[in-house]
Image 1: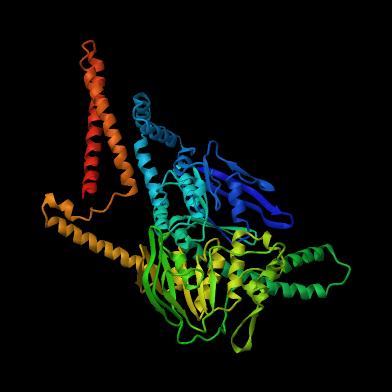
Image 2: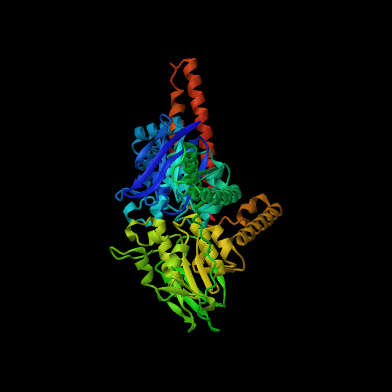
Length: 626
């Protein structure tokens, strides 16, 4: 079933033409990713699909009655609403039913309003959806529902907007970099959610594992042309390589034909026949093909960076905490030459703080950092680049350096570095304010690299970068001879460039793991299976009475379970009242046999629900008592 048809759309801003004559369709249950370089119009296409922008020409046709949700990179939310109000004010009608029920729970004395809300929950089968709603908020770490949106961080707002988009259950979900601002646990949960759910997606993402495991079609926009690949990321890479080889063969043939036709053209007299005029027109077409060249750049640098001494970076018993939270607790580490360390962990566990302490931007509470005399840091932060008004791209780079020294006395100029990171000569003289968000991040990377550091520290370098730029950055880092310390949620990126991990567990605990991200996940999964096997053995060897106590259930209830426990108490109270009222109605001697049957069915249904909820309440009570 076709949901959206895009026909011959074009978009330009003044003289800048992003794309022309693009056509494609979106069918039900397709999961499509759009891949392109930064600045080629990915976000513009998403905005056009979502109805937030219009093409200069062409049309977008939607199936009648289609409902669309759009997750933007910078979502627009009402700052005066709470997290809960924002979610419950969405377009999903069942959420409105749940909102009414939540309001009724706040005023249990109004039994009539509660009864109406309860019956509406029953009628719309909203109980399961309420559980799903709580699960999504819990997984995205939106635990404090009463927090005002205006006080949330940028990452929390993005997660709230994502929760809204998921709970709207639209016919088409459009996503602009959905994994930005999510930690690895959230990304893997979202990956599983999309993989298992029958949902129609159209997204832009740089997360290549996400593309591999979620998408079943990839559209690539390159040099104004749209290419379709009916498969996941691995299929896309395979078929793109085959396409490039075919294009190279065709290009070679075109050049040979061009030389032949050029020789013919030079031998032609000025007075030409109709036949030769046709051949001349063909010549111009061949010439265009022969001179077409691909704008793909490979970084092959032999950087002549400053020599490192024997002392690199020493961390001695460093601690750092804030009121109510410990980030580092007497952490020790001695860096060796050429080490490539990745940092992973949940949001808020202190990863960025650790980088700031290492680079001297923050002071530890105790302990000390000893930096070798030859060490020169290159620090890429999440804050991005600060640009003066009216600055051009090339001017920004030259403020930090004119060249990078290479081996054998060669140099890489600022202009050449920009070219390698996909800024052609014309783009280098554009004003920075004209750049897209991803292009600005690319420029920021260049300002760090032009300084020729021998110790690179990168905090989320992959956010907002396109896949082509990521491949270029990975090539650079694989050849980089210095030390590397990187925080990233991009699993593919981490697997490729690091061979050692610091895992920030929270509460000041940092685990040192000798391997990359996939190695760590394999280790974690094997550990979980081992613990589960031991647990099952333990249960078999204990009595039924003591088994629940020997299990690791003494921990506090999760946020989701706490909410469930409170609601169960109110629901049980309400069901008991309904049960009592129904039982009293049976005393009415004027009831007909048919009316008694109806009441009996209702009573049976209420008793069954009461028993289920009471049993669950006892389970949660045991955990609380433990």
